[in-house]
Amino acid sequence: MESTPSGAFLRAANGYWLTGIKPLRSGRHYTSGHTTMPTSPPIHRIPRVKTIGMMHPLLWLVQGMRDVAQSGWVSILHGVAMAVIGAAIIAIAQQRFWLLAGALSGFMVIAPVLATGLYALSRAISRKEKANLSVVLKTWLNWQNSHFNKWDNDYWCMVQFGLLLGAAATGWVMTSAALITLLSPAPINNPMDFVQHVILAKDNWLFEIWLAVGGILAAPMFASSVVSMPLLLDRRVTLMQAIATSWQTVLVNPAPLALWAAIIMLFTMLGIGSLLLGLIAVIPMLGHASWHAYRDLVDVTGFEEREAFSAPDSQLGKL
Image (cartoon, rainbow, N blue to C red; front, side, top):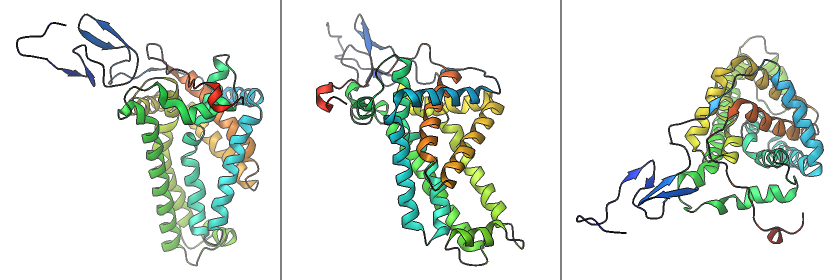
């Protein structure tokens, strides 16, 4: 390559170096002359959001159950893991129900990240690939293999989103604990205390305040996460693109997604109320259903697909 009189000339655009040198960001590229161009979309673009019918969330549940049946025990294992984690939270905070109430609900806030393996299984099924434990392990352990630069935003986007939800969950746990501790007329040490002094209390509005604050904090988290994790898993988009797309789905389809949020809350409450045993079935169904929600809501045409997490099977064994 011929040099210019002024020496090597570098110019940055959308995070890529445009002088023919190796790009600093990951993804597929093509070269035209001396210029290396990205095939991924500009950073300000978001996928087109589709309009859906009011009853679509019920269809997602049916599709989710089909994926559970196809994935088998690998899918159910996610539910078992969530139930075990929930049981551990209860064991640690059983004598501190003022903390437990927020901890369990906060745990559900980060469920979209913990369900990443379920999205990967549904993705494999949609691509007519094997949906087995190998897919889950490759998703959690080997997805970074397709990245050239380990320090760019594309590499860390899923980690960043997990930290964002984790911070939100922690904030809710602290807020919930503060509300119950400061406003309750008596110490809350067990579920019966919570029912008597918070839910059934006649001389204060603590339960209503607790629900209202929880709803105010949960609404933006739901809007930010309804399709973000499946989109980040499936396509090469930035974290901000994924979150903006997720918000757009809610703005375009407020009624169907309000129904979807209510369905998620209902099944989660049933799962927790059944001594956590119901989570074994509920979590896989909702996780797979969330993948189908993403596919129905977002048109990803023109956005580069993330390569399958294809570490050699010899590294993971025959699973």
